Image (cartoon, rainbow, N blue to C red; front, side):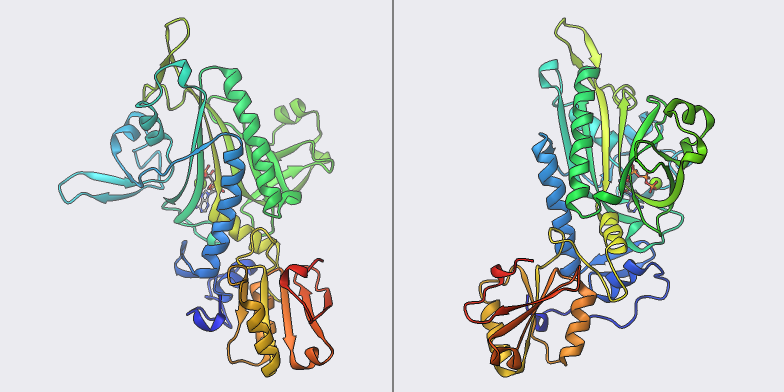
Length: 412
Ligand code: ATP
Ligand code: MG
């Protein structure tokens, strides 16, 4: 992308109610635009970043045999009434809307009910199981407090995966695969070392659920962990009984703030029973399908990565997440011409700062935007046959011979 051709400008200040550092950078660097509290637009750089996060998620889920779908956002009240989740007193986060023809629809906050309804058309026999379907979709939740930028939205992007099994063993096998896939996803997103799989409250049907919590100062949750990581608990399950079961003492645990980036639940028949999702087993008997659900906060992740991977100058994107790999700057006539030649053939992975601005301003923007490498071609550098490359994450600068230089040669 040529910087001069995009309408996006970097800003000196973020909206004043944006308090988290990463959230401020995302606004200032032109990744997102704040519409309302908890409601954001994604601009070209932000959209590419989000797409990269989605690509990593898709890649790992497809590897464990999940199939992608896209379910409707407008919700028929009926299945939600059957599970008693249409009631605003039980689900206080509903956004509702009126049909012109009469009647009410909801804007999906999650998709257990509709996905079960859908699967009733396709699951009939044990031969149809196990199966797992996921989507990456916009959810709507009337959250009381929307702070920390895109980390808690009223409109946000979630990956939600649902598994359907005939037996406990089938369910457990898939649940385990999902755990492993989640670990790989968070590793590839550059936050694996600080993301803990925690024991959380499991609701009615299983003792615990698992959450994936990333340690971050602006996180809304508190987790308790011991240093060797073998026990990590959410605050809500921290009690004497659980501690005894896990074989740890309260004083062996440290606490820290964290953000929930994902969760996995064993649902058993919580939704399949009231909605009547059944299959015919080998022996001809009708049985209720066993389910699991597995969420990841896609847009929240972008906020968490921004918050964790930044310094006092700006964002620091991991290579697989960054919207572009190279921030290219030409200085002087020869430098600019050379940079222009480098840009050709690299349009997809390079942000070419060809704006009519002082180099200092471009350097500051390159640090704010946080692409992995800044490549500077200047008249003076070319006189010495040199091109300067700076790695954003370490600040290290290396010089490459300008002759025969290609962006592919960057190797540190
Ligand atoms: P939280 O406790 O943060 O409200 P939740 O338990 O309501 O999360 P789920 O309904 O299981 O979350 O949603 C799956 C994932 O979607 C969560 O793990 C989280 O990463 C993300 N998520 C939930 N609510 C929001 C939100 N308002 N904005 C952005 N992401 C969200
Ligand atoms: Mg919630």
